[in-house]
Length: 164
Image 1 (tube, rainbow, N blue to C red):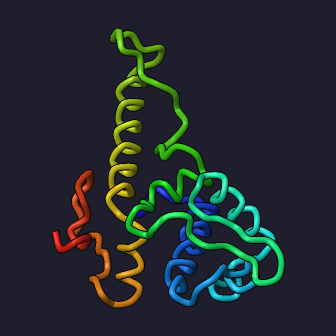
Image 2 (cartoon, helix red, strand yellow):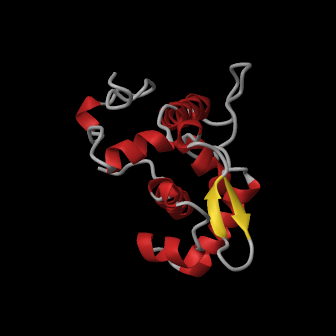
């Protein structure tokens, strides 16, 4: 079965922020090199992603000796949708345009399909809005259950989040 995909940039950004959150109690900034080693991500690409996350206000950086990156906000206030959007732009199922609202379509069934794709993107965005970086940290530490397809309901808060 094919699935709607998060881009490599979205995945790498999520992994980088998860690493920062998991090691936040160590105090001080974390170097790009350390994040790359912990996550297995390529350092040059990671640097670009961290700059985008900084631009979105999700991380702060410190230059010089002992420099690196820290979360700019608490993990509870960073949603997975904000991470993905910071590096990929708006969450959509495809870039197909908007359906006609007056009922006239250029091609057979096109407007119906455009509306379906828009709805899929909206469900994905709402789902990722419901998951915070703190939720992913809790799962990573074994403090919360793993997500599973059989438990999730499209468009609602995932049941494995916050004891739903």
